[in-house]
Image (tube, rainbow, N blue to C red):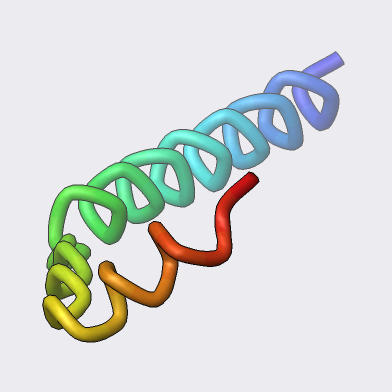
Length: 50
């Protein structure tokens, strides 16, 4: 019975640590926005659209 409790506690701690690590890594990700296309590209897009 004690071995089951110890294995469960170790599993709980490992899952908790991995969850915290994953959340912190997600918040540390630097999000970027793509630049707007140039006017030349926009005018080509307008002429080719139906």
